[in-house]
Structures are given as structure tokens and as C-alpha cells.
Image 1 (tube, rainbow, N blue to C red):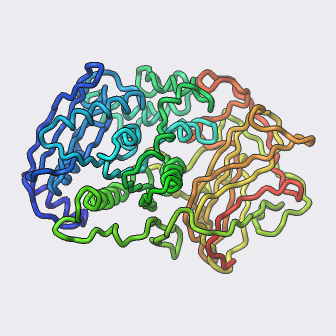
Image 2 (image 1 turned 30 degrees about the vertical axis):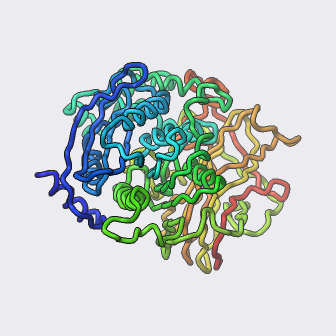
Image 3 (image 1 turned 180 degrees about the horizontal axis):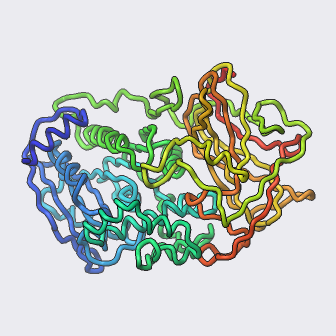
Length: 555
């Protein structure tokens, strides 16, 4: 099918704003030389218009598939689309080492763009996930030439997402390592592995020691996986040049951020939003009911991203059309739950009243103050780790809201449930918990999940978080009790009348987070597993609770 027809059909299917059709000239496999001589393979989609701005996409996922469509869409809208494979991927030379070369390679690519006869001095960038990391690596160095950024399910800093709660995001990291390796194997072999349900990856997620898990999943050693197992402490110098958070405030270009409530990078992306706001810029934020791999996210990213580039890479929107962003609120988010839907806000987070829902004896959750009560107890066994269900995962088909009753029936999961709500309770903003714990072992994890129990008794996960407890990070009181603050994923959710709130407390969520062996052994080499009891206290001296940012309450 001719490229122009494909572009027009895609524009209609995605309900993109109409634009005057333009011819697109495609030049593939251009060698762009980096400072160390490595050739970075690059495709150029040129529009049939003079003095057109350029949109750069740097990616480790190859230059085909959806990126070819995006290249044509951009060029058809009067942009030079430059799509480059990161070193060691997609035909580019060198070795792929996540986050190591993106700043220098990005700067070298920008220098190459400046030497092209079609360069207009106007740069935009577009990127999803790792492509967004590559944007943030370059953005501060692009100066005034950078006129717009589109950052989709991504962030400037990956370290805290990799070690969320100072544990290890095993499912995300190992699945991503396997995905990158899969790009190097024959297509037919890859399809066969997917058809079988990726049994090697499933086996690797349950394997110990973790230092062997990459070989179980792929048959080879993945250098960055090994490095991430070794360099996991907050003070590790390894991450100093691999995060770009300290450069975000220097970016003056308009930024649109698109993400989802169940995305793996949501907390880090909202940190970037806060940094830009504190620096005096006006980013646009869209948060939808999406996971990292949601088809709806892809569609929203194209719509929002192309509209943003239309507005900021031209003196006026195409054909005199007013940009839809010009009149919209800075924040647009989707409120989950019955009666929710899309809302426009002036900023994130909105004004709320933080309300404590206390854990009580008898598995009760209520806003009443805690009372004298004996603690609840469960035994966590890392040899049979509490499983994770849904939530923020890399693979979309396993992520998002799921019915949690199966995991809640386990003896190593405590649940606390409210009475049916007399009216709706709407929660928008950061969610946190404070759990008071006494443990047989000094090394443990505390996992907290907030759920919505509907009228049929199904328990749908809304948001959650985990904290790894070590003697160095937490000090017990005289009674041996630890107060563990847990930052849950932010949310926007409406608990309907007749529904109930539920809080889970457990000792892990595997394989989303690596299991805690209970021994304090190093992350990559631990093989000995120790089970132990935990007590969750909820008396007046130890008021365990989840704290919700309430916008409206009719309880």
C-alpha cells in the first residue's frame, strides 16, 4: 500500500487533526558518526516543504514497525522526522549499554543535524519509555534549539524505578533484558517462544541466585542486568552518570507528558513534572487508565504528541487551526472507578484533605481512631513468595487492575476492609501508608495495596507500594516495633457508594519485586531463604493506616 495512503488512513483511524497532504521522501540507513567513530544508523523522513523543523527519535527497539508510521505521520505534517537506532541496536555500531552513551550520542547527532542543508534550527523530540530517557539525556544540551518535547511513560531518572522501595523491580528489569535480547534472535524462533508463553522467562523469574537469571531467560549473560544486581545501593557511583534528573530544571522547552496510572515509571515521571513546575515552566500532563503497553496509551501519545508539536514547532497551528492544547487545562487525568472519567485540573496534585483509614482488629478498615488491640500476625516464606497480581508491569497483558481475591485468600496476606460506603469517596493524588511492624527477622519487605471491593465482592487493585527494611535503614523502638512509611503509586480513583475500601499488607509481591530472602545476603547471590513471622500493630501507640488524598467524600 503506498505510503501516502497508509498515512492518511492512520490519521483517520487515530482521529488526528487534518492536515494538507505532503509528499514524503525516505532515506534509510544514513551513517551518523559519533565522536568515538561508531556509526549510528539513522532514517530520515523528509517533508515536501522548506524550512521545516526536525523531530528526533532515538530508540533501541529498531527503526521499523510503528516508528515507520510515526516517521511518515510527522513528515506528512511538515516535519523532518529523524529516527536513529541507539548504539548496539537496529544496525548501529558499538555495544548497547543502557543510559551510558545517550547524552554523548545525542549531542553528536544534534551536531550532525546542524550540518544538514535542511536544518532549520528548530528541534522537537518524541519518545516512549527508553526513547524518553534518551530525550532527557540530550534535552539540557540542546539549548534554545529545542522547541518541544513529547515524553511518554518515561522519566529522567531510572534508578529509583529499578529499585522501587529499595527492593529490585525484578519482573520489569528481567523482562526488558529478555525483550532486548529477543531482537537479536531469528524471527521464527521468537514467535515460537512467544507462542509457548515464554517458559524460559517464567523459569528465570523464579530462579535463584538472581545472578544466573539472565542466562536462564536468554541463554547468555546480559551485562547491564549483572551490573544492576551489583550496584543497587542508593550511594552507588554507578548511577551518577546514568540518571538525568539534575538536568531537568535546565530544560526550558515546552514538555507534554503522557502516562498511565499503572505505568512502571509513573512516580518518577511525576517527579519530573514537579521539577519543571518548580523551575517555572508549564508542562502539560496527561494521565490515563493505561499500563506501560496499553494500545490506548499509544493512540493517546500520538494524538497528544502530534498536537503538541503542531503547536510548538510552528508559529501557528497548521492551516490557521487553533491548537487544542492552547485552551486546555495543564493537567488532564482519568479518574477510575464507577462514575469517574476524564477531568481537567490546573496543576498536579490538586488540593485535597489527607484522610487516614486506620487498620483495626477484626480485619476492619475505618477512619475511626485506633483502639487497644492485639497485633495481627502472618508468616512470610520466601520459598513460597507471596505472588504479585496485576499493577504496574512492563507487559501490558499482565498489568493493570485484576481481581485480587485469589492472593487475598493466602495466609501470608492480611486484609482490612471498610463497611460499604454510604456515598462516593474520590481520591486524587499521592497515596501513602504507615505500617507498624514487629518482625522475627531484621530483613523484610512491607507491601501495601489499596483495593476497591465492588458489590459482587471482587477486589480490584487501585495502587500499591513496597519498602525493603534493613537494620541500616530502620531502627526499632524499645518494644521491637518498626514504623515503616510506604509510598504507594499515585492515583485518581472514585470509590462508589456501596463499594468497600480494602488494604492488603503482605511480605512481598513476587516477581514484580525480587523476594526478600530474609538473610541480608547480596541481591544477586542470595540462595539461602529464611521464613519468619511478622506482626502488624494497630493500637493507639502504633496507628497503622493508609492515608488517602480525598477530594470528595460521602462516606
